[in-house]
Image (cartoon, rainbow, N blue to C red):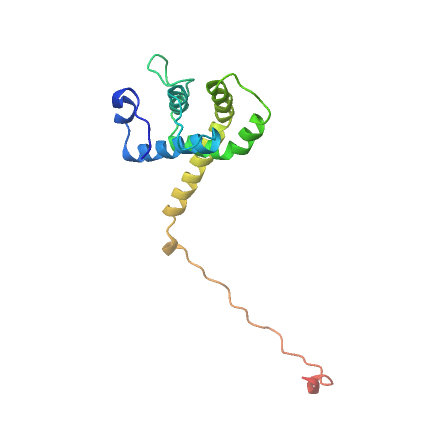
Length: 162
């Protein structure tokens, strides 16, 4: 794992293995695909806190403000992936005073789309659950048999052609 450890482990201590994996995927996607950093660069702490804040529906992760939402890192990652072309085209030709200003602009695009992605994921999970519940053993397929009620009438002149 390539995850960042913030404030002596406070950030990572509350996370399950699945959350750590999701966080790691999100971190590396944002670092490489969105911010276009190379292997030698790390996301600054203020960007990491902004990413963490997205999970809680806040501007930045902190304990001073009330949580307004609860999104998984996976949902945020999907939102970044879905919005990537929008983000890249929005950034084209723009200059920012620093990396944080650039990321706040990017995060605003993600925030505007995260509820749509969340709903799509929720609906997909509900559909999957409904599909798993259906018991095909109880489904009975009986079809009607067709019986011809008329005699075959063949034209005697054409009978020799076949």
